Amino acid sequence: MAEIIVVGEAMERALALLEGGDVIAIPTETVYGLAGDATNGIGVARIFEAKGRPRFNPLIAHVADMAMAERIALFDPLSRKLAETFWPGPLTLVLPQRPGNGIHPLVTAGLGTIALRMPRGFGGDLIARLGRPLAAPSANSSGKISATTAQAVSDDLGGRIRLVVDGGATPVGLESTIVKVEGSEVRLLRPGGIAAAEIESALGKTLLRGTAVGIEAPGMLASHYAPGAAVRLNVQTVDAGEALLAFGNRRADGWEGAVALVNLSEAGDLREAASNLFAYMQDLDRSGAATIAVEPIPFEGLGEAINDRLSRAAAPRDNIASET
Ligand code: TXA
Ligand code: MG
Image (cartoon, rainbow, N blue to C red; front, side, top):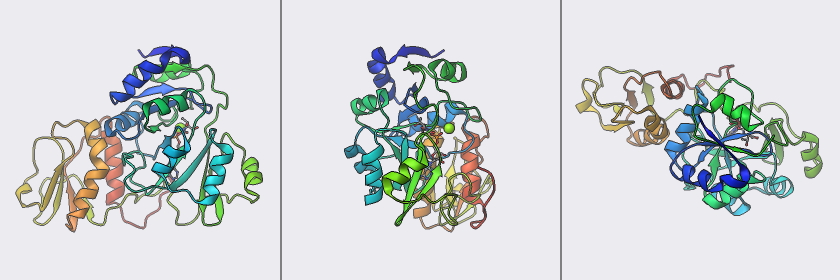
């Protein structure tokens, strides 16, 4: 079971676990977060694994200060104004990523944008000490409501993580409000801890509501993170000229004819495979092959999420599903 340590005594233990690529639960002003180093693929993969999240929904990256935020993302004037007004606090901004920012692609599900938030209190102090951003979804297993006390986190995830930092009940108790600037307009993507009216009065303009047609709505597109190449799943035989995304230590027939080959995990470790998935797909896409052939990947554990992402990459490219 996870240790529960009160905030005043938890800093060194929390840092040691994060440095080792582990995930821990931390209090924020909104809800408890399940935090891992956003630059460490194994740490990020462990977040999805601990939550039992069937899909790689993009995660919020949490920062300690504006300098860290600007190293990760590109701020337009409206987003900067919102950050100045509401950070630290329960507001998340979706922004274009700064190239080469070191954020592991699993955090953003391969999107060009990133959700950023600056939490108050222990979370902010921890990120400043670590010197790197923390990826953190709400600390609950997939499908359950967000945890607002250390005990609720422990009851739900205590068997799967090593540390819950206890900061008492979270003051906001509801996830952050998520907005995204679109040209001269600002869209409300998720209502949350800061009322829309507060944001509207800070901006002097009305927020757009609902999802824009054609906007990236993570987890809602059947075809999502589609590479340029076609994708063929569960291959037993590789056709000449295909690139091969391999898994484990037994190769599909005809693998010698592949124009490029990368292995998600030689050892068959699904956590390692999850952390490599997006980068390796990009590598194979850059090989110029018309088709990426993918070896079968088991559906257990993180394999379910990996297969979900792969089936979206293989889906017809103009197909919008209603699921989230
Ligand atoms: O208060 C909160 O926001 C909490 C605490 C822990 O910070 N975190 C939280 O994370 O609620 P999570 O993973 O449960 O929700 C993140 C939301 C998801 O709905 C996801 O789709 C959206 O943020 N999101 C993340 N990146 C995005 C992006 N690039 N574009 C649009 N939406 C994004
Ligand atoms: Mg959540």
